[in-house]
Image (cartoon, rainbow, N blue to C red; front, side, top):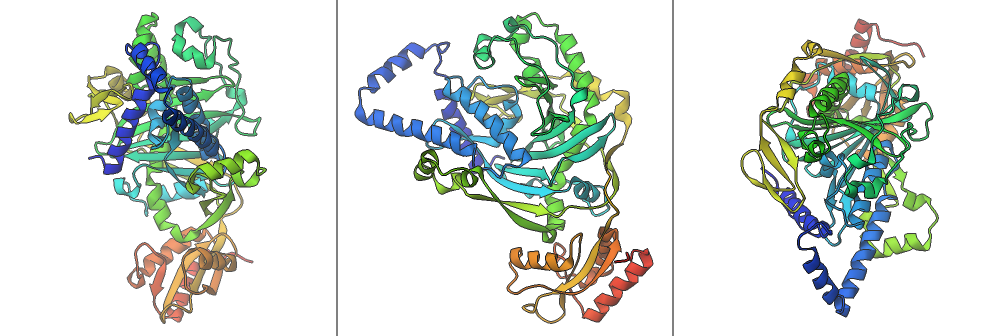
Length: 544
């Protein structure tokens, strides 16, 4: 059941689409333009239009400047600009294939004819720490819909430089980050990877005649530069984008996309029937059997990439467990860092403050030093074979799987044999996927006991950190809402501090105040002795 906010967003999309469809191909184009010409004589209408155009331009400019400039938000803003360019050129319903997934990350503005990003939450963490969690006994394999706020973008960025990911068949892949958005029971995921530029393969030459004239308005008539794009500022990698849409109510995968970015265009491979069954393919005489076979063959190679994406849906549980270890970094936005020009001052004067922030708060987990190798369980997801989502013009009314009306897309009941064919791939029999290996220094850190003078007697925090415990205490005191500073009572330098901490917490389960927090009620001597016994038992003590 869609929430009230989701229904309002759908209604705005429907209104947006009706306006976006005022193009020469529209049967009512002449009548609409005549009415507009008559209305232009009204001074009040002209003032309103001037205000609306200014807001469109201001919002478009603001969203290119109001992020923390991390990996994920940079790409989301890049796509948003492309979508709005089409809106402003009168082709708002003529979006690229990426919009089939990334539509979940944008919403029409309530006051002007422009798209903007949904509310964003920014995170920065080490991929090794996350995969260590999802492959541990502490992880819960279930996905709770309510763990994600609806119509909110969760932007998961790797901390520092790219994270080296070793996937079967992709030993040169790096992970930059991912974005997740939920609408109802559907999750859309986009992830940004980098692959070695030496491995980039240019796609086949595309004849402009095979591309509809409306689309050629945005990419020209060629020839296009299909050489590899740089991954941010790195000459070593090119951008590889993976996207998928999953319905967790029935654990079905609805679509998968792999996009290789070249300088002018993306080379897209997908199993999305809304693309593969596009009538334009048949009109241009394309061999659909060959298209489907090629797409499934390539996507099969990337199954480990999609398995990683699917496992990102456990992130809220990871954050909940490690919440005390996250601290807030305030990242200045380009609005703050850039020169305060007249244009910037106008943005601030005409837009709501929420669209012109000087800083963005990024919840950050300190870097890990561990040498890790993990096995990611394949999630129990199935390919949808009973039908598929067909993208409609945004103003058109379709129906979901249960017959409920929905704008902009419709569920098509049709058994899709190629889904079943893909599931018979011999490699599908594997139940586990070797995922990550990142080489760093020895896994050394600290376990500690802290307390706050503001707490009642015999309340202590027991946890671990990879940094100096005093620095960790200062961070916690500043960001966790403590009424008084946390004080380090004692700390131990150990190997594999997370494993030591988990064993300590298991031993102290009866003394734990809240299952989601790391606070325990016991006398200090009992806690100290427990820690020392476990450190000795595990042989974990590390010399200073």
